[in-house]
Length: 332
Ligand code: GFB
Image (cartoon, rainbow, N blue to C red; front, side, top):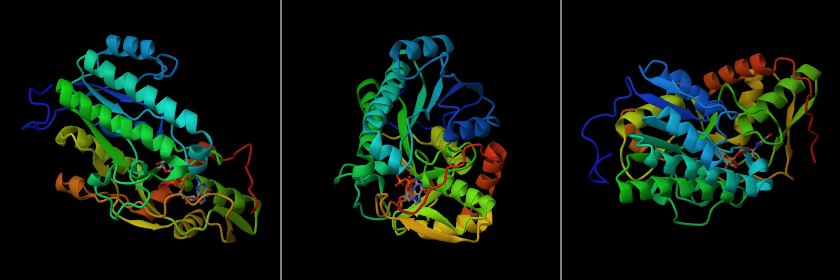
């Protein structure tokens, strides 16, 4: 802990030899962090849900008390795509509030030296000026489809800031853009757009369908980052960043969903038509984040979108080569 709550440490936070807990190691970002941390010379700690349900305070206290992590990546969260966020608001709000409050407060009590809390680009106002700078937080109304998740993540940022201000904890926050990659969720009712379209294109190809369904109008713009690039940026942020304000983690480029769908069809090899289901929501029209702060730390993404999508499709085939319960959608 620093004696001056707002001060930047003069040196990098050294991970070597430290006990580093990746909370949420089974998720897409958590598992990418575990892969990335393997070369950092630290001891990686993980807790299975059977060992510690992170929504339960006594379980978190017991686990952290026993394992005494020195650094924590809070990658554990209830996450999902636009439909899951829109239809399960209570879970997205409550589970995320519980997880972050339990971990952050127990981190204070167990003497964690540094904690990095992960949020999402949906914390920003729906109509924020683009590219979205970190200072746009709380300057306007949120996107209604994910305000519950956004409020929980904003509360997590504020918890880190409050613990920094009141107790001098080196707790920081990073806000990744829309992520994709190995270990993603391919359930069509709860997934994000990239895994959903990979699965739909693959199954349409295998069945020989003439078309596949894309939700919404296809006009919303989204910025995508491969989970391995995200993990790389997060490790750098853990080592080099120590400010109260959160930091954006993105690729710096966005594209319309209709173009993403075409690109995914090319990567997968589906040559049929893409049809819209406009009964499904579009969500935020655009959420391209400014990457100035991250670039100032010297970080650049390495994985281009086409290459990243090919990697994600290869991972999908490995994970779900022959899906037993193919989920077929028809245009509304
Ligand atoms: O990835 P996605 O679910 O999340 O949807 P958001 C992005 C865009 O892709 C929306 C469209 O405009 C969707 O309508 N889309 C097209 C599809 N086809 C599909 C499909 O088959 N499945 C899905 N899921 N989308 C989430 C937030 O917003 O982003 C979360 O709800 C979080 O809170 C996450 O912030 C990163 O980008 O709209």
